[in-house]
Length: 394
Image 1 (cartoon, rainbow, N blue to C red):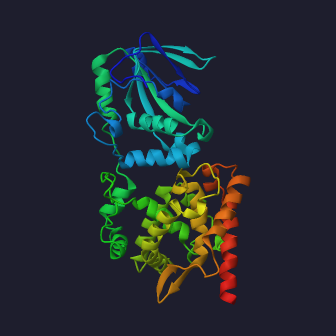
Image 2: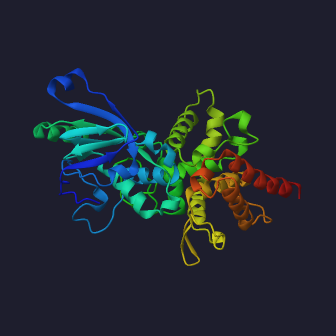
Image 3: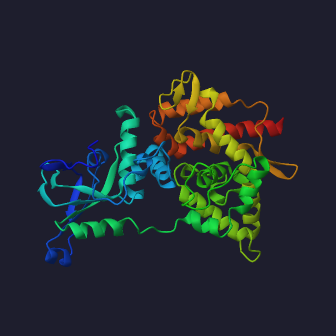
């Protein structure tokens, strides 16, 4: 990567997919030009950022070790698990340049003294993705950008400051501030007093557990009897639990509100479902940890799995979420509390082998394809459902 304190001599070639002039009458009158478009992730790697008020803080100067914030985790999770949605989920990168020559045929913009002024965290995560994953495993990723062309140093500084201090309040902070996560945290702490849920986007350290990930897992584990969509009870559509954190969080918010409101039309249903969230939370957390490093994946030969010799270090979410969703067939009440209790005849290795077949033959050995394929969820769920029925008959 180009050193951030250095400016490239001459003009820097910036390859783009689309580029459109969106200059306002005020921009034209002031001699500015403003463009919008999207470009391949690789195009942002060598852009300087010396005009920006914030550099990539994960590797910022003076840091003794990498420290991911919630922002970085969200970006990294999208790049690794939902790469085709990155361009629509990420707000993009803002670039400034003193001048521009556009070769629309070659889709190259020659930028004079360019710099990122907003989006350094996004660019840093794009660089991390491109450097950490072999090209054979990289998805094609585009990123939105806004390009401001002007030669006013003072205004460039003002724009950089303004663009970096306009942050919306995240849903997580709203839910946390209202106390909607307190009971969930209390249940977790009964199993492990050290667990503290993240209740605000400003709680960025590793001392907090990823609340949204926990809710994704619990949603995947909801049994058909409690599934809120009647037409899906035979085959719940849970593909969104893999990549849509905010949707799972908002669903929990809706369920909590109705469960606590006796006048709500769906109060009883929401109350029963909320009880499931509370009962299963500790087990859901442990199940996720277990499957992320499940020893049963040793010897499967799946290249997407991170290993140290034969020790499994990390199984991609795209592979394990269809498995977690299939385990919802084993959700049942035991002594009045919901548990995930597979029958004695069930063996994890069997569902791993079934998942491997789906991964290779249907998902074409791509974790993201697997996590986003409803047919794979349905296939694995039917297997566990057979075990459940046989167990009941026995």
